[in-house]
Amino acid sequence: MSDSAKRIKELLEKSICNSSKVFIVGHNTPDYDSIGSALALSIIAKNYGKNAYIIVNDNDIGLDPGIKKILDENKKIHNIISLEECHSLIDEHSLLIATDVNKKYLVSVKNDLDKFSDILVIDHHEEDKETIPTTKKIVDLSASSVSEMITQVLTSLKIKYDQEIANYLLAGIILDTKSYQNNTTAITHDATKKLIQKGADLDYVNSLFLTEFDQEGKIELLIHTPGNTIFQEYEQSSLLKTRNITFTINRASPGTIYQKLDIAKAADKMLKFRVADASFVLGFLKENMVCISARSRSDINVGQIMGRIDYCGGNAKNAGGLIETDDIFAVEKKLMKEIQWGLPSIALPLEEPPITKVKKLRKA
Image 1 (cartoon, one colour):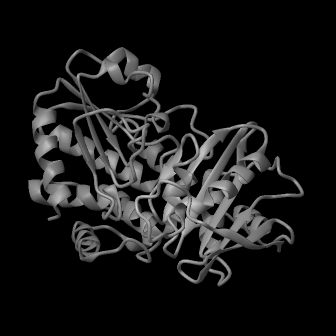
Image 2 (tube, helix red, strand yellow; image 1 turned 30 degrees about the vertical axis):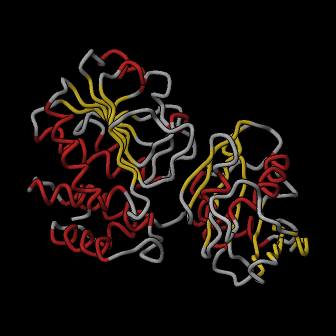
């Protein structure tokens, strides 16, 4: 059991037992790690005899069809509620657990944090100035996912849970490790083993990640249409090494609306090409709402780069954010300026951007 999981177990026991009700919130537009860990935390709260409520923003856009299915199937079983319903249920001894998120601007309760008597944050993404203020915070950057950590807690507490919860937690691990390609350790594999022993069905979990035919075509057009992707080569004289970074936008029809998962998958796909050490894909989720997905398979820290932009963040390999604007190209320009902050440097911590020059700029 990891040190972070031990700490989570301790804080959960104390915080839940001292609360009247437990409210659980993940990041806006939840993914499998966010919703899987939230459902498991609901079970833990119920194990201590507390009413648990999972808050999901009714205004979420670009939800993955698999997530919608999970929410529909569990809406009544696990008290999945809206933000408005939450307002009517909070009392002076309510506990809020934020899972798979630590930024205020990424949770639907961002304007209601002071209404909770206690707040516990469980996450694996880098913190910044917008991190939710609380003394009870476990942020483990070495963990593959919150699902991995909560699986350890469930095992340690010897709490019974059904096959569905095992499926959701396994989906969270598979999503955040890119099918065990990133951030995977012996603890990750041990958590997977325990979930399979609890009945997790790999066929079912893999079916959650299937993409509709027209959705896949939209992704392929985004990344393969000539002119959509710009390649930049950054050269650092101190390391004598060139880093290749891609920026992808639907440049012919920049106002095209995508699902959040489409943009994330496009960023993942870009890393399959030898030309990309890191990829940034931008697209609109709705009018005036730009989504960015950033991925890295090298020592480029995309979380640090995204952290330089308001309301964005993540970890070294996987980051992103949402920006309210109608100018997607201005966002791209800002990204290009901030790239140097995430490039490896022998001078740490970075006080000024490392001396970096753009060697070449071209379109696909």
